[in-house]
Length: 226
Image (cartoon, rainbow, N blue to C red; front, side, top):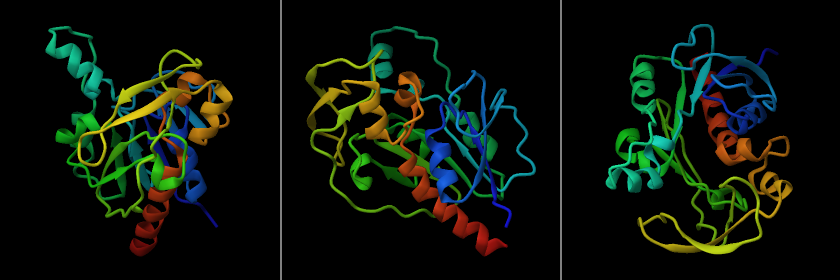
């Protein structure tokens, strides 16, 4: 039986791809940067202009740096970091598509995303918090679960043995949680569910558990149409 084909734009190291593959899709990843650890078929190309024909579903994770809390702080201080908004034109590009599509980004992009779904690590029993917003032309349901109280952070230039407090947005937009950076690459891979990734790839990714949940519901939508 032929598996549906999903196009993974701005694919990075393939965190999203693994979830979709586990849900039943064959996956083609597209990124403008080389991705030597990508676990499936990879094409180095500009995701903004890559053809969208001949596929069954699309996932896009435009770079999030334009919408991060850190960038908002820099912008308030008049600092221009050079990041470009690729989220807005991606939403515009997908607006007329009839195949199932999903766009992912950080919580700070909420005003642009108009998100239909918010996921975090506690919903999947993961060691990370990693809250993300998803916008789709398919109704996607998510489990209710408490936010993990002491998650492992996968960020910065590499692992280090430090415990500190870092502010994060909880469900009510407030909250302060204790978080430490993963002590090793292996710990980062474990809490994210990305055993193949290097530090940069894992740091920039979303956990495969998120897109497996989404992918299973996209598969159901495709089956209804078929």
